[in-house]
Every structure is written in structure tokens, then in C-alpha cells.
Length: 439
Image (cartoon, rainbow, N blue to C red; front, side, top):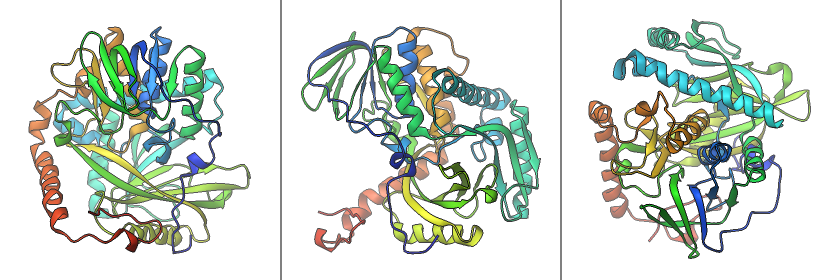
């Protein structure tokens, strides 16, 4: 991968099947459930609800799967870097087990959908690894492996991986998956519509009246009347529980390029070191080559030099995978909760028919699939063992992890003041591919 990185669209969006945009909602509509957002969480919920016999309308401001989901690294795994030892300490062994079970069942369910619908989405079974190169962090990895195994996962501590460099240690979880997320979601959307669900693209939602029934108002003036409403817009567009105080946005960069198939790393890898590095490959039409996908350089949006970060990530890929022919570079964005676990459930303490899915912390694929099933259970009145774990109304864990919350809000306050005092460049001074906050 050479330097002078040129940002492109994501590989997943560039290689997904095309098609004409779906029409925007132009007139009032009555349904059982309105789902706002057509990413993995929204479409998973809509598909599950349609299967459960509910009439569903999905309202998407852009195109299906073309938002955050279209820019993911597309790893489908329960190994979320270092999470199980922390969960064991903050929510007890049962909380860690519920987290592991909910994520595992979501992935197994997705594999069943792929088989049932015959979805051609490059589904591959792979082992997942969280690794470190610093010997001083080995004990941390051993504790994570033990906690993950105690939570019921096929986890172990290893020192050998398929990476082209040595590691000090790694947590390995077998039987995980990687796939083409946009192909998967487009197939899900098509099946949803075949079963009577409706999807409206280019439809921006501006208002929500909670009642019995609820009413969702669009920018164009149409109203959707629904018994239940799901807000699945990555960051909640309606924040009546002040969730913003417990959510922190994070940007990560991706560079990708082709490599000979015999250089496949044979797994999915991530490390918390080096400002995060994530590595996986994907199949290509040329069976002799694969796409190498390298992710990292996480940062708070609006801070630092993004182009310089792209160059740093590309240089790391060059060093460890020499000769890779770069084809794509893009950026993704994640939302981290201050208390580790995503927020999926009632929108606020007084909500009876409005729900939210947010705060997936970089693991929105398994998390979004889990959210679709959890929200469907809550809307249809079924019991779900992990409803309490993901409940956005939880306060005890938010208080317990208050330092993270305070740190997040201190950063918000710093930008709120600092960004208004700092001089801003004129629009005409911005080079192609760059952006800035201007007045």
C-alpha cells in the first residue's frame, strides 16, 4: 500500500448489487411498527417483526445499508476486543454469560438466515483473536480468555496466530464469521418487502409524538401512525432520556488492498495496542487473491489530522504486509457507551411504545442482529433473558462507571467552548477531500 492515501467509498458499498432508489414516503401511512433507520439494527428488527406478523414501515433518510453499516470492517464475532473480564467485574459472571449468549445466538441466527434465504454474501467461518505484542499485557489477555471461557465461549489463550509477525499472547474464540454486510442486508430488505414490509428511502424523520398510537412526522409532511416505534439511527435522533451524556462517538479508518490468497491471515484479528489495529481478509472474484482489510487509528471526530492518520495506517499495513496493492480507503464511526454494554430497549423511563438501539461500541453487526431479536421480543410481549442487561434505563452501572461518563462530558465541554474560540478557515481554502467547521 503506497502513501498519499486517496479516500474512496467502502468496498462493501462499491461491490454491492445496484438498483434504483426506493421511493420516499409521500403520503400518510398506518402500520403496526415504524422503524427509523435502515442499517443492521433497523433492518434486523423490521425483518424479525415482519416474520412475527406485524405490519412494518422502515424510514431511511438515505439508502438502505449505506450509512454506518456500509462502512464497517464486517467481522461477525462475540470476541469484542477485551470485554468479558470487565463485564465479570462490573456485572458479575451472570452478566458476562448473558452478553456472550445474546451475541452468540445472534450470529447463529444470522447464519441460519443466510442458509434459509440462500444469501450470497461471502459468508466464511473464521476464528477470532484479540492479541497483544507487549509481554507486559499477557496477564490481561489470560484474564480475558478465562472470563470468556467462563461466560460459555469456546475461548482459549494462545501464543501462535496466522499473523505475519509474532505476538506475546492472544485470546482465541473459534467458529466466528465474516461476510459482506451490504449484500446480506439488501437480501434481508428484499425478503422483508416480499412479506409485506415497506421501506422508504430518502425519508427524513423530524418529529415523534409518543402516544397510543404514536405518530412519526417526516420532513416532507407525511405522518406514519404506528402502535410502536423503533429508533435505530446509530446515534438516537430523539434523545428524551439524555442518552447523549452516556454515549461517545469514535472514528476509525480503514485501508484495504489485494493480497495473494496464500498470504491469507486465516482469522480475524484485533489489538487494543497501537491505537487499535484490526486485520481480516475477504474473498475476491479472482480466487488467487483476497482483499486485506486493515482498520485502526481511532479518534474523536473533529480532532487531529485525518489524512495523516490514514498515512499512518497505510504505513503500518505496508510494513506488515509488504506488496499489498491498495484499492480502497474509507472511515467508519462508532458510538461507545460509558458503561460497556449497548443500549437496546425502551427509549426512556416513561416509554411504553418507543424503543431505541444504540451504543454498540464498534461491534454493531452482532449487536444490531441481537437488537433486532430483542426489540421484537419486547414489542410482541415475549420474555428475553437479557432485556435487563441492555436496558437503556439502567442507572446503577452508569453510576458505577461514572468516571467514564464524566470524561466523555468533559471532552464535550472542551469542544463546545474551544471550537467556538478557535479561528476557522474560509471555505475556499479547503482542499478536495477535506472538511472543517466554518462560520
